[in-house]
Length: 306
Image 1 (cartoon, one colour):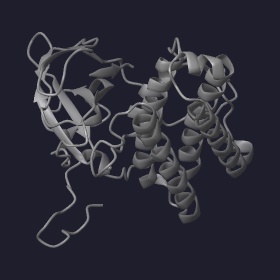
Image 2 (cartoon, one colour):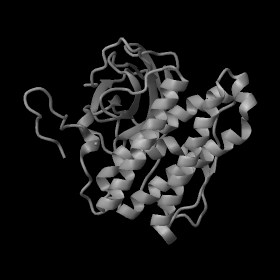
Image 3 (tube, helix red, strand yellow):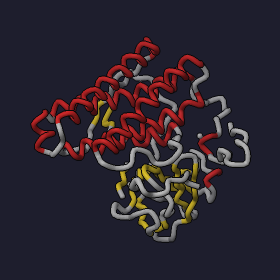
Image 4 (cartoon, one colour):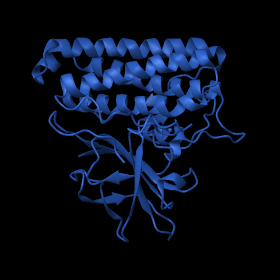
């Protein structure tokens, strides 16, 4: 398993299946402080600025010879260069839409050390990007901007699937559904790469939660240690998110819990004092999310997480 520190219900589609209606992140905030479309676009631009810089820096550092030495055919770097171009186009489009409300790039630090760790981190960042757009879509009231966001989301998903499968030889998806994440959850992950931002940037309606790490060697179904700063005495729960499913598992006194055995692909976990996933709010999240990744082969059943 790899870890990093760093969702309007629909009617049942016949008797065969129905979309879960209790997923907490599917509940659109109706409060007066819910983010505006402009703020959501600024949030998206913040993430796209990060991705643009990530690819540009890595490709400047690793030339064709470096990819060849790492065992990759030359077309891999060529496709990654195309992805870098896509991220630059996303920045240009969002900046144009925002005009004077645009946010400038921040300063970043990315923990890759070679071509392989760059590609591994790229796959993770793209997956978070998909979760970011899926979770933020509920706040976009302008239909034209929503359509644009959908086209970016689908492209980010293609990036992630290609990097994971064609390049990494692993599963291109986690399940029938991608995993929407709240703005705060995504920003928590992104903030691990951000060292500073221009003072002139508009303040985003987000906050970063304390960091959470999980045993790097733990697999789905294993007991794992969850490491985070905890200043209260309430019982904590590990809340796992994958696709449109979620599950709560109580932590022991020494912060150990069993990872659900049916998690596949990229998933997320936060620590909360809420005993049920449906009751998780920004006020009761203690730490996280951490990113979990449980690869699976082509002959494994791949049902939605519940």
